[in-house]
Length: 367
Ligand code: F6R
Image: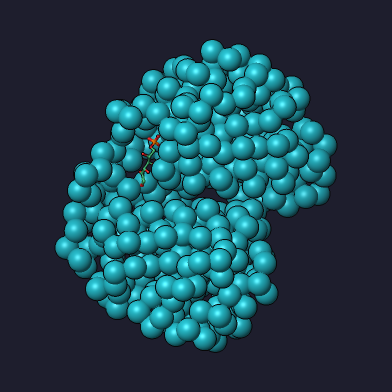
């Protein structure tokens, strides 16, 4: 059942070219220049006229939500907030029938997310679901939604469900942006072609980084801390990279927006601190170059995720992971893949049970 892979997690990482393709199938029609999503289209005026969109989720799905905020605000120009379901439900949030709530949940059974939705529903908000498990509790309570179609995710650490969530959020943002008139036809066509090319690029990444991440992992099996840094769209990707590492390897890891480094975490940097930095060419590259200079001045060990042919960051980094270029807004989908592999191999070399990490459950049905 693991298809020849040692763990479900590795199998699911490798399934991503296919799972992302499945998520787009029947929705992204590149030749016709159309994104078909009945759940969005049937309620498109609700989305367009929403006071704001509130995205509610937990864990990895919450990280997808943060990227969703960047996507929807950039392309659809509708204000978005992202909240942890557990915080939202207990803070007496201001919510009205002009709000649209998007719930993101792989399992569709997360207790906090479910409770937050019930509350939002009581207040009259329109509820949209992005779930992976068909007919799950969250999918059933929503007014409309889009399934991610990533296929069953067995490994406790979410991988292919995360990239499928990002795919759906991209489709939603582009569709709304086109409809709202904020995204011109030429840009829309360019972006959908780019999104359509993501499965192929992930295939390339898997091929190019599978061995490399194993070699890097071997050097860090005794690390006690890791920092993950990224800016813009890749700030949430840094959070997700850190979560993957901590949950399966039990190494403490924190993700930060790269510029926040100087507001605290820089105090931790010395020759024993590995720092994973996501630095694609499009996306505040020059700022990241100076962040890397600051890290190297303090002898931190830099593992850089950069685009092919990169020079400046690569020249300073201790380890370089090259990924193909894509639009900034899709770069977290591509950049997340080597970070999943890195976390996986560090955990495997430490002898951890990656598919069933201690204390964790695949679906958290109690609060
Ligand atoms: C991390 C992970 C968890 C889940 C979280 C939400 O790898 O799997 O953080 O993302 O428990 O779960 P769902 O998406 O099922 O609501």
